Length: 281
Image (cartoon, rainbow, N blue to C red; front, side, top):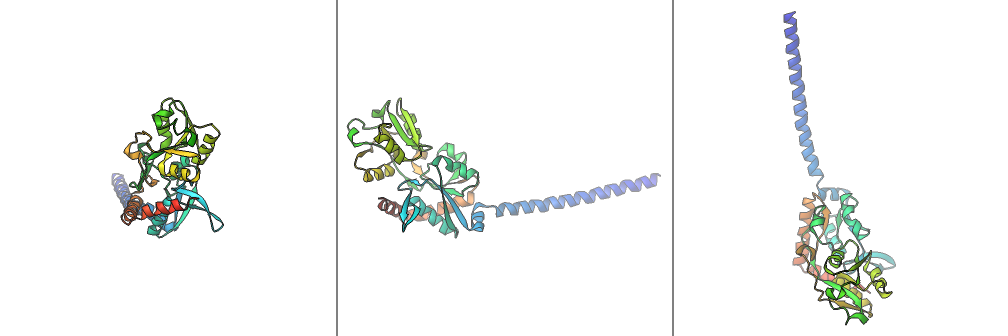
């Protein structure tokens, strides 16, 4: 009995050792597969595999991005779009543009609806918690749009104390208006155009936006005036626009930064801005 028991024990030990070896080998194999899987799941490779770069933007912010009828077709254009085309070219894929509200853009990256966001977006600390950003590709100052008849009344942000001030929802300008104008009554809408219409009917006294956008609207409307010396104090992270990508997009961020540097070195970003302004009419 003891001899038989001994054989059983030895058999059990050997079986357990064999099973452990299989599990260990399988674990190593799985580990390797996991490592390979992670490589395969790099953002750049993912985009190349599907053959499409899906861009999220909010196409109501000329000259950054806006709608225009070209050859009878509604088309989204602007200097942000030209930058996106260059990135798609570098990736060797087609560009697909998804237009949405500005405040939905970061969430669209988090849910995987889009691969990238280019929409004159500032890389604030709060946004950096949710998404990765490229280097700054363009820096603009801020302006305040008012009616021409009010240009002697309103000269900077301090003269708007207690007034109703508007800005596009979800933008840095919303924060500037709320935080740096005393006793402000704030109104946020989806587009600067809507806010200007509201200003004309007396619901808003002024509209805060980036200076290129303000100058675009001044060019289009002779009843408007733009305050350029606004008095706003702006953090460095809020001065420039950067391209947003999902968290963990290291290789895509590197590629995008490479494209931005190349375009800047060749003077193409400035060229895109001039061309976008010329297309506004």
